[in-house]
Amino acid sequence: MSRIALITGATSGIGRATAEAFADLEYQLILCGRRQERLDELQEQLSQKTAVTTLNFDVRDWSEVNDAISTLSEEWQAIDILLNNAGSARGMSPIQEGSVDDWDQMIDGNVQGVLYVSKAVMPGMVARKRGHIINLSSVAGKQTYANGAVYCASKAAVEALSAGMRLDLTQHGIKVTNIAPGAVETEFSVVRFSGDTERAAKVYEGFEPLTAEDIADTIVYAVTAPAHVTIADMTILASAQAAATTIYRK
Ligand code: 8X3
Image (cartoon, rainbow, N blue to C red; front, side, top):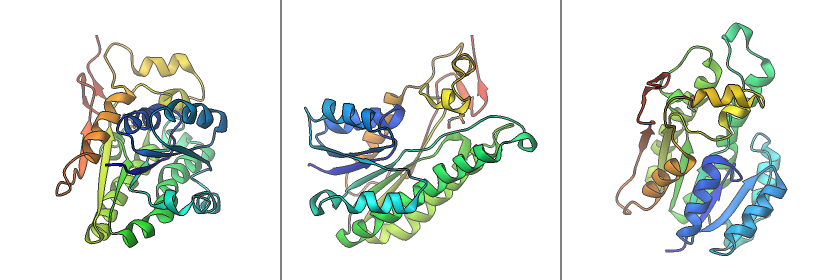
């Protein structure tokens, strides 16, 4: 069955891996991000398998989000799957030393971003009486850890939004899946540590972390489940990881 999927943060990490997996399923793709060259490059690659369009906007800006999504043709606006993947962690420090700019980036990107893009897509899903929203949370949304209060708070908000969306949208035939990954090696830690690749590499030292493709597999599992099955919530940890910050390293 051909479906239309909109992916935020599509140009890297879990977003990109899921775009590739969806292309293999021949889902039509709306790839969203802020780096146009990367969007163009991915569009060119995946167009060999499926129809692909791109949208360049910042999830933190409601008018940008709304304007971009309203430029889609009527056919492309019939979105079946929304993957709210865009988001980031910024910094890691005791809360009393946290940077307001980092806080704004996390709260605006991880929380408003999910809200704004969903706001632009949900009414159409309700009108069509079908749809599937997948929100990228984190194990950090379930377990608060030291030096990560604001990131953990932003992901706890995503957990609450997933549950709230499910309560409000189930009656309209819309599924909501919350995905909570543990340690996945992507650009995540490089961004968190402002480009400090050495510090980022240490996060994944001494054990085999998850890959973006591992998480894409779980998303494919959720979207290909039979119509009567909702995968409501999945936590995926690296095998050496017992909890958010309990990792057995060699
Ligand atoms: C990413 C997982 O444990 O680094 O959200 O916060 S963690």
